[in-house]
Every structure is written in C-alpha cells, then in structure tokens.
Length: 344
Ligand SMILES: [Zn+2]
Image (tube, rainbow, N blue to C red; front, side, top):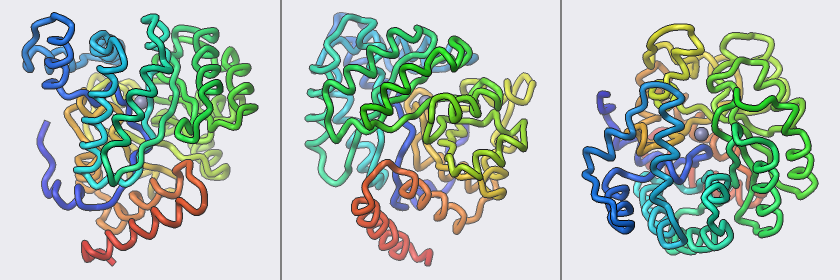
C-alpha cells in the first residue's frame, strides 16, 4: 500500500481518535518483544505476515493471535505506553481507546489488574488524554458480554467512559444484547457498538433503536440504504469511519459485493457531503499498517479538501464523550493548532 503524501501536515493537525483498539496498535517490533518475554522466538517479518488478513475471518484470527502474547499487567503496561507515545507523536490530544476486556476474561486474566497497569502506564505520557472503552466480543455471546459490562460498572472510574462490542457482528442477533445495554445505560456509561462493518444497514438501525448506541463503529453498510443514512443524520448518530481497515479486512469489498475494493470506492466522502455525522479513525493501526494521520492523508486524496478535513478533525472533538468544559478546552487547542498551520 502506498505511503500517503504530505503525511507531516496531517500529523501536525490536532486530532481526537475515537475508534482505535489498543491490541490492534501493537507494532510488529513490540510483538517480537512480547513474544520473547514469553519464550517465543519470532521475527518482525513473521509478526507482520501474521497481520496481513485475507478476509474478515482471518483478521479476527490475527487479532486473537496477537493478544495471545498479552499475558498480564506488565504486557498491557508496555503496549499502553507505546500507544500513548504514538498518539502524542501524531498530535492526538484526546483518544477514546477500546480495550478487549472480553479477551482478558476468556484467557482467565484479571481485567482489573491489567486495566490498572495500563491506565497508569499511559498516564505517564504527558500531553495526551486517554480514556477507555470496555469492549466485549460479540460472537462469544450475551453472558460474556454482560461480564464485561459488570466489571466496567464495578471499577467505576471517570476514565472508563463507555462500553462497546466488537468482533463478528453476524455472530449474535442484536436483540440478544438488549439486556446488556439496558444494564450499561443504568450504570451511566456511554453505549457503543461495531455495526454495519460487514453487516447490512438493518444492523446499524437495530443498534440505535434496540441498544441505544450513541455512535456506530464503521457503519459503512448504510451506504446501501438512503433511509438509514437519513435516519442517522436526523438522530445525529455519528459513524466512526476507518477506511484502511475496511479495505484490509475486505469489509468494503463485501459491502459492494465485489472481490476487491479501493479507496476510491469508499463511501466516506459521500457520507460527509450529505451531512451524515462522521469521524475518521485508524481502528487497528499496526495491523493495517496505518495511523490516524495517514487516514487523514488518504481521505484528502479521496477528494475532500483541506477545509473539509479540518471540519472532519473538528467533528472528532464534537462527538467525543467529554464534558462541555473539556470539549471547549480541547476545541480551543484544536483551533489554535489549525491557525498555526495557516488553515484559517
Ligand atoms: Zn474496531
């Protein structure tokens, strides 16, 4: 995949990152380091090769493979510090980071200990604020999803801002998750879910109507249905769009009913122009050989102007789960960064 031009400019643009998985951000060199900690010899090239998915199912397999090297608090602390440093290098002022708590339970780990270690490690990197989304794995069922919701409620921290579900959206009907999301709402946490990534527009609509989802992870399936796009626009529900991810996992090709798809077929520019609330994100940057800055460069090349891109970056602050006071302070930093770049 070509490296986008003028990446430096998009690195300098202040940003918020709202859809990124901590476990998808582990660079191949760090995978090698983690594997060595646990007595597994691996080269960077081997790690990178394991990251190259042929389709969505293989992507889920790679994700589960890499998390096999996260065996305790020290491992989570290492990847959280590296992640925070990467956000800082890219001038990300604020990030809502998804943590696969479902995988920790599945591996019989102590999610509270892992969380405490990673939160502390990330907090040592100044200049970027990270908050956390506790995430369950959809295809593993409603009971494990509830276990994740319960630990999020139990730990009750202002840094755990939302509950989400990822994985295979076709693996469990939306209605089966109703009770989990009712519980999450009763605990005052924000509600997120991946939907319309490989699934159709009906799964996006169900996520909003049945589960009260406040933002949708991906949601590109709505490109197939104008009414769902209008529905989201009317309700002001943003889609967290991750173009490179959609190409690498084959999700876009699948939505288009084709064998392959390129950036030029991605619906983000159309969503933006028709006034659908959208934000731009990297999803699993190390696994997809991208970064949030590179996603901005890609979308600019897909036809949005620099001013459009500034609006897109601003939207990531507007749709963040922060207090009015924190939003004003982030937007102030954003606007002064934009002026420094000579954009307004
Ligand atoms: Zn995701």
